[in-house]
Image 1: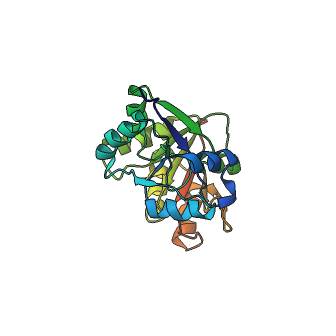
Image 2: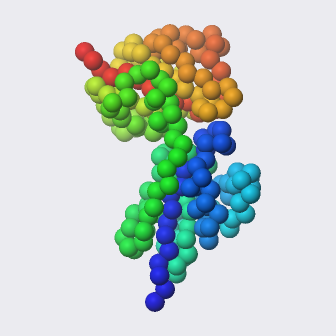
Image 3: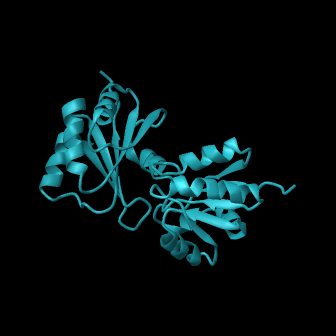
Length: 229
């Protein structure tokens, strides 16, 4: 009977390529298959480190077809590395179903930690770090969106969201309406040359964006102070 393979959940850089770990490079080099959201992007990234892997796309569109295929390869003894386009897989990323399927099949799942935009933004924000809640991207509409905004309004912890540059102003307006004029931090281009932390109150941030004083490029991490009332 063949020994089952291992599913490695491997963090990659969120911007600065020097942030990858030696352990991640070692494991990526020995994996039989590298499952990634965008194989072209991953191929270019890993070629920078001299790694020539065998790639398999795994993303939101094909995950239902890919999960049984990947689990079957793991059962055959292949080692597979799961990576995202940037940062830690499963954080606002489609890897959850694959991890659970692997666990159900008694396959070892090994996290290989590294860069995370959530933690990078948090430790540089100046907001409390002892307890926080991460909500990912705010849904575009519906009951879930209202429930998340309500949760942020009542949370005493620092709340963290991801947002696109196209929706950042609208999302800040919603935060103002539901949470009041709290301290917020906008983090962008993390670990890159133009890394920026923009600190202030929600009303001030909205005005700065309207006046063109915030560069709307790349995804934002929004950090919101807790409700200390």
